[in-house]
Amino acid sequence: MSELFEKGLKVRKEVLGEEWVEKSLSNANEFNMDMQELVTEYCWGEIWTRPGLERRHRSMINIAMLAALNRPNELKIHTAGALRNGVTKKEVQEILLQVAIYCGVPAAVDSFRVANEVIKDLND
Image (cartoon, rainbow, N blue to C red):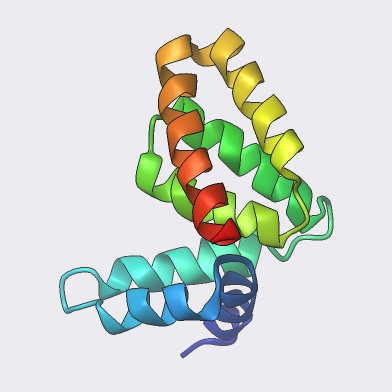
């Protein structure tokens, strides 16, 4: 693997959790492995390692974007990552309330449901 992949893999595991990342990679096949490599190298190796924003800020931005795009699976993963990165439950709540105003109540309602599941699972 490339140096960029290894750099991205380290950050991806730190944010999303080693178990989740290992499962994603082990479940990859000939069809979707190129996507796993692309995500690891460019999302995590190129962007998440840039010095311009702290990880918690990147996580907050991701929560807002994923809620706006109505991507519940990614929102679930990134909400857990955001909490690992120091984003508080109150901050997640405020982000999703802002989503309600700028992106629509249905997007926020679904996003609150997803985020609540993550928070409940982490507290159990």
